[in-house]
Length: 401
Length: 236
Image 1 (cartoon, rainbow over the protein chains, first blue to last red):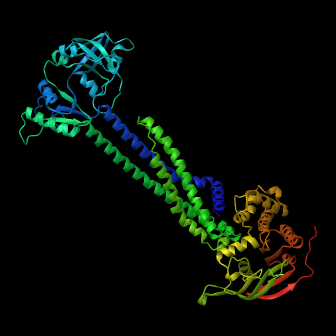
Image 2: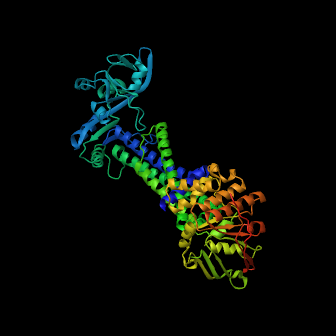
Image 3: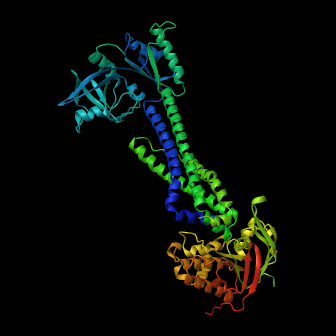
């Protein structure tokens, strides 16, 4: 009996292609939007996590001042090398402590010039920020200690100054300081967070202090926390130490800020996850609406096909067979809609991910769920019209025009 | 031999109380196997109600109806559907074919409900279409066929299950006289050569002339039952 009903339902669907397609459209859109939203959301979460972890995991960045804005009031004092030393010696669980200072400068090589940021730091900076070399080397201990005029340049700087020519070993000028290129950084691209590491010239801390900024200020301290230590606890310890060193009494706010990349990453991926769930829920509503669409058309179709149902009953169809035929029709339509929706969402996710540069992460879990939900929609919303069709009186149905 | 149809004291009322309409007021009549019965009467005489009851589409209010010796009024709805599927072929005035469906598929439909295999369905349906002379039109949909051809498809659909009896409700009502004669000759041939029992409702004397027995209805009662020895015979 089941195969009979299935056969009849399939014949009926094939006979009314346009109507079937329109019936299915709601489900197609519903399933496609749910799966696309969730898949893209997952891609976004993944992308956020990757970008933040590319900044270096378990990384604390300490800067003077509070909040993101620069305006208002006297600027709090920068750190100095003694602060760096105090953190290095008094705080447990740190793998890297890298002081940083920076200046804006125009880099000049032959006829080319390029305005960029010059960062003075130690090799710890590269390590903590996960920066790798495309060619050349990092600073030697001697160069760092003596404050030699050597630099490691980012890809953007290299491309703008040297084009296709060899850059290693060449000397470029930063304002009126000349320095020799010893390394070129691997291209990373605009990460979206923090500065663009491709557009910078990195020099030993001492060199920048002496030749470019002309002072002993440390503008930021990068601290990498060892895996087995909790970055929040370490951050608290550093905060306590710095308050002491900066003579802040109890009740006075910190005049510096510790930026925890792990916390940042957790917050961001938490936000995108909530956003994904929200978008998925909105899309799920459209799936239900799609189900109502199926019920609508099926109900109309029962009325329109009253005579046909009468004929079927007259030539010996049992009521259960009529019920099954309509139910299977609804389930088949919604399932086919679900399948088409999955294909659409797969393509859409791929294209959108490509267009907005997100990782392509098709969520097969939600795809399966959405498919079964669409079939369920068919059962739920197909039952009422099917029941109505099966309970028609054959004599009246045959008289129906 | 068991009598095909035996109806005793059959009544049928529609509605209830003061609005009740008594369509049948106590009908007695029989159909022997192999008979060709024409039920005649003016509209409102109860002949269509009678046909619906004979076809197990409707149940009598009182009285008994035995089909091949079995009391039909005691069967459940599904059992009556199975009885229709197995023993009864319907022919309607309005043909009642499924639109947008080929003649072949229309004829296959009863076999589909019977659960026959694809090959058996095709073979059976083609044989039935051949019997009504429409085998070359198997792939055509009702819209592509003339009225006479559509009624032949409907007859093929009724024949395909090899039923005990064909119930025809004004089978020529929608056809011109020439097509009507063709259909009547076909039915007559099926009855005489195929031995299929036929009960046909009509109000046209020319059509009733093909029948062996004429049952006249008036106001829900059987007025007369006549045996026609001089009926029209068809010899192919």
